[in-house]
Length: 69
Image (cartoon, rainbow, N blue to C red; front, side, top):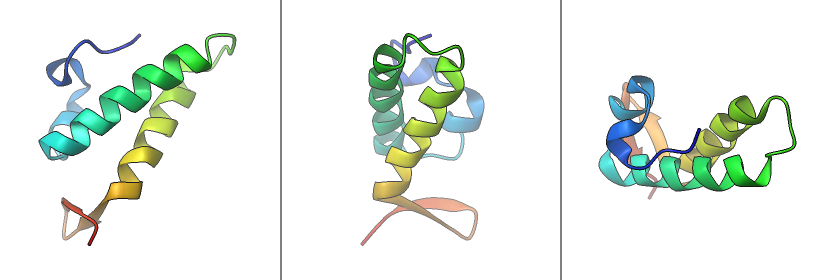
């Protein structure tokens, strides 16, 4: 289901990601949710798409997500 705010994101997204990355995740997930409405695995695909979007702007270094340079 789509997320209304970043506070609604799953804990495994909220805890490790900085606020901007959470915003990217939420917006991308919600867009993918709408785009893949015909798929049975809609939620799984939407989470994968959202993580992919985050990884375009952020990288994990020493267990912390930081903006790519």
